[in-house]
Image 1 (tube, each protein chain N blue to C red):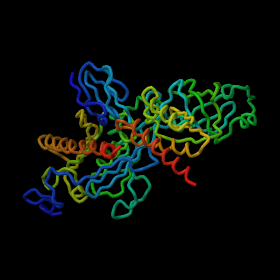
Image 2 (cartoon, each protein chain N blue to C red):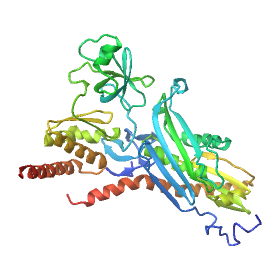
Image 3 (tube, helix red, strand yellow):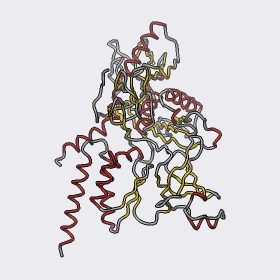
Image 4 (cartoon, one colour):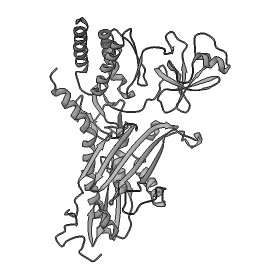
Length: 246
Length: 237
């Protein structure tokens, strides 16, 4: 794609966003009845459903850890999540992203409280339009909290990329396809502990510092939306109960 | 020693609750002298201890817990019982009843069969192994009548209430026999199925509004209103 097609000289992107602006987000928890915890996250056109089961027993038994729970993640893209049908079998990319998401969450989950068990996290991509692993981490972290599994902090994630020489946050699929650099970033924001940092491409040291700052600021915004999403349902019920005359 | 929340405030994982010389109760993590919440729950401060009462979470057995479980398998000399914990529990024949039972599978099956609901006590639990149960006490054993309700295990303390205030209020208002298993099963027995339904409604209200203050009074007025309405209907020809 020719230079200047994705970002105007004024710094406005295809969808009208500024460089450091997130897509409109929608977060909700408790969307699945059968799961112990669940969450739905929408970031622009990227839509993710996450479900948490457990702690439950591990089969075969020898896979269990004697001192902590086994955190298992499955990142999966629905066949209809992309324009050309994706085979539902797990691809190399999905296996890798499952590992990456598990590692980003394992620092936050207090697995040592549940030895000899497994906690299963399922991240299902319903529609993919860039930043699916970050949206997946946001959803999985909410689902874990919704399941009541003890966590040190919520994990918020956001991608930063370099498109046509500009650093931008929360890439869409179109931007992702033609970007020079893609940097997914996840952080336990309350503790400022980074749990995921991948870098695909090349950044100068100055650009890297700026990219991390942008990612951190965006994660801060997401973190507050996550907190608000977890509280919303209970506070609405509380207002309803307190409002009704007794 | 600042405290950032007041009682009944809703908190989520990672929130800084207080700083200073407080003790960390359940649902709270102490790092240095900072106390953080680890679950979605209700903030409570009592006698220098910071607590977060979780709104959801798994059932982790403890020795002495009264539980209600379903027999899912028979592996002589044990019954395998699902008590909604991470692992299924084992009930050994020698602990299965006050009367002695032989180890033969037919005899085991005639005492409890797969699908039966049991009232039992957790007799031992090491986190590495399945918890063991016992029914060798009066009142424990197979449940043959009444209604069993399932509630989230995290809401059990709320249903019992402070010094069992909530559950004894529901008992005295409805006249039902109610047994609350720590694993989130509630057993209700009464002569009238109407009363059992009334208890079910009250329990549902407790579970739904567990985190809103003044619940005991609200449930009580609900039960009183329902009973009044019921009596009015029954006196009509």
